[in-house]
Image (cartoon, rainbow, N blue to C red):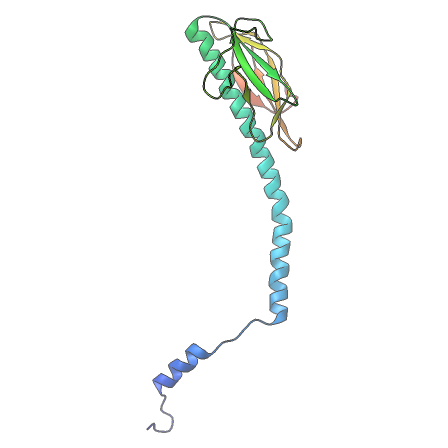
Length: 178
C-alpha cells in the first residue's frame, strides 16, 4: 500500500522505460532537407578533391620512374632515355642509350614493368605530352623537357619538369621549366 503523495519507484521506472515519443513528419522532413543540402554541397567538393588526388598520384608515379631512370644512369655509368606513349596506351619505359624510341635489347625491365619494359599509369590517368628525356651517367638531363599527366576525367593536369641539371619538379601546367 502506498500513502497518498508517495511515489512507487517500480511504477515510475516502468513508465520511464515504456514512455516513447516519436518524430513528427515535419521534423523528419527538416532533417531530410538538411542532409540533402549538405550532400549537395559536399559531393562536388569531394569529386574535385578526388580528381586532384588522382592527378597528383599520377605525377608522383612519373617522378619516381624518372628518378629511377636517373639513378640507373648514374649507377651503371651509361645514359638512360625515357620513352612515353600518350593515349590510348598511356605508358612509359626506359632504355640504356640515347636513342628513343627504345631499340630492342636495350629496354630496362624490372619491377612494375611488363616484358617489354612498359609501365602503365594507374587510375585511368594519361600522358598528354611526353618528349624523350635522356639522363647522362652524371645524372644530368642531356635532353630535358616537360612531361604532362592528366586525370581520367580530363579536368586537371600537372607538368613534370626535367631541367638540364637533372632536377625533377612537379608544377602547374604551363609554368616555365627552369
